[in-house]
View: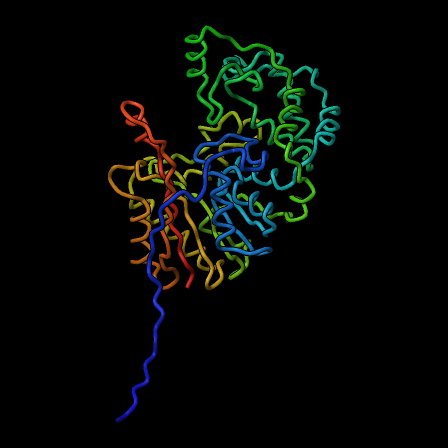
Length: 389
């Protein structure tokens, strides 16, 4: 009887994992992660979980939508090579500054060289800034802004990032009257808020607040360790559809939270921070293609198709891409992880295969009655993991 040779084909099978894999507890993360409060920032412990799961020491981790720099900072803390970019110049500056930190002594020396009392023009102050800042605070902010622009070294970039973190917010540690910390509202909105609260901007000295914030965010130290594992130019302002600065087949893991449908990625919600960084309308226009405020899922799919095609070039065969896609509660019409998985299978199956959906479920305390009903809104977090063929 003739023998039949059998060839076994190893086919990957898509898996779903559900449980508590990470928490949002800030005590478990380096203090530098929280230097600037930005919308839609995922937990450093999420980044740590996937970097540990899919990479080894000295592997390369990329985030092409880096936001406040959670992925690259966590990567260097875990002794990985970090690459990151964002189309938003504010975000790319924040991320770059985190990977080149200075200590309290360096910050104090820089601030000693700033002439905070120099007279400045008040043109535009009443129209744009008077609802946020006392005139003397505004003068000090403008003088610090000018000093940073003149000497844009490591200390200046770090001080810029720290100032962005305290420019507006809701406690006495911020430079503005009571305001939202994550986004910059319009002057009219801020005036209305001031009226409702019966408040007006009071003098807030800039230098001591900057130094206090530096001390807080560098409380966990690691300045030299972070610098040792960081590379000059590793953080860029770039469109995720064009990563020409990254060599082909050089990345082990992509870990990112891409913009979602119904998101606005322009600079208008960050206009005060944009002003402090000296950004222009040209910078604003560069961000507009990342805006999906219309909510049309087809536009988002076209955008992500181009992104994944470019990521297929830079990720090594056998490497991974993990995308944080929010909660099932974020949209009632569809689940973004299912839409994304379908896109991969229909259009990009030559390059990528869906590997795992990781659903992180927050722990719900055992409660009864009204308290139990209030916990039903706790949000899960869904991360779709793809494998590069």
